[in-house]
Length: 117
Length: 112
Image (cartoon, rainbow over all chains, first blue to last red; front, side, top):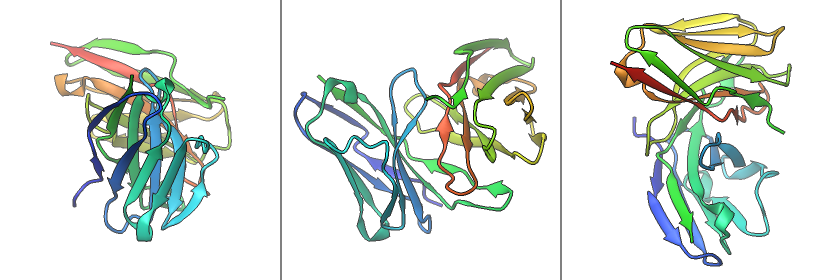
């Protein structure tokens, strides 16, 4: 099966500019996640979608970050305006969820490395 | 508030020997624990998981042990191979939302 597709792979922007990332999850995966991974840290959840609805965006800095999931499939994450501390890898993941004692885990994309200068 | 902690940022092991990676968590209500492996410039890939109702799960060279009373889990890799050199992340989630909380990762280097 095809994996989770993300683009672009790399992006360099100046602070206060805007940037958008795109994600296409695995077909049939209802749940989609965006994670931010700062160098030397583990991934941190930004937002979780179930189909095209937001389940949890409590960790999303809503003054500058926004995300949507179109028709319950593709998703975009936008930052406007960017700050230096937004430099990180942005990971998209999708999941089938789980059943009882078994959790299928996530499938991650390769990520977008954002550098804000 | 970091609920999952990996206190060893790096581990170096000789090829053929055992690698032991440790992970501690603070929330006793976690239902699932997972290990992910990450190579440079790639996304994390799922390695092995364990439910909170079990204390051990094996998959080939990889075994995860869960000690709920100590809120501790470990990943054993036996024998270690050069291709195992990567960053390993421990993660935990609840049964009702499957959102993963990750540790900071441990970089494993397998020496020939």
